[in-house]
Image: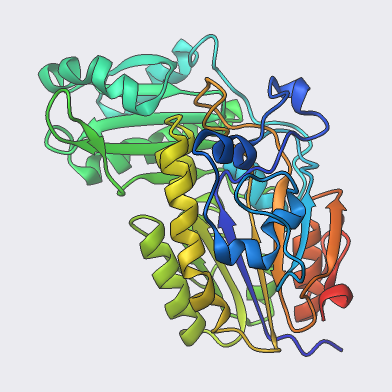
Length: 391
């Protein structure tokens, strides 16, 4: 019998810890989001994460040496699913493996049949339809969009159908409506996410807003979130968790406006939900810095998270399990704006976790297996619990 009453999972979106064994197959040989960021800025300053054990799981992290007595358990997770996108990573943390990768259209753009169908049903025309950085393409096509009202369509190396529109040209509700139409048709093409990308400002200074909305395919099988909510436990999603799971398994959810907001909402949730699961995504490392090849920003984003660590852990008790991890990498120094196939960190706060070396785990699902054992839920079909090692 477990006496753990609450599990908290905080995803540092894109915080990779070095190339995965199969990184070369994804074009990511040598990727190291944390290591290269540290080198690019002359060393990271993360005193709280250092004390927790971040330097112990990445022993050559400039500015973050291994702790003599880490306050948390530490290790690394290896992705077992095919792919390196946010949906796949979050689903695996929640207990399901994706064996068949979702479809990408990086080289060709989306099929004319798909684009034409969405145009006809929505009443909007698209411009673009090629792979690009979101901040770059709105500058490239922003003027044409302002003049014609046509929506900007683009993709990336991930399985994403992204639609950008200026809020003064296309109201937010209308952009969301078009994305809902696109989601239905993208299911036929195995496209992982449709993403609404609203932006504001003038030509030359456009900026995307936090009103982004992701429309993901629903998980292909039950996750630990489904099992928890079915058991009557509260499951609270913070950030883009609701979008990534298409609302499945969540009893409540809230979106955020940046990582400071996400961290504040997590602290509030720790007061509000004494049992169940709290699942937080901190998106800025990926969205604002990794995709924009900005190691200085990435370092500042890590420092922000580090500053909140004492406030988060102070809210935990012996009946809590708190996990810090990531969903993939996004090396901001590799000359690409795409995600990278990497190990991700595993830091665990629990009553007997301090200094425990959890090693290199074979799948992200170990997190779901541990939560399932802690909360006495149906375990995932794959995954090895580390609960006894930390409690």
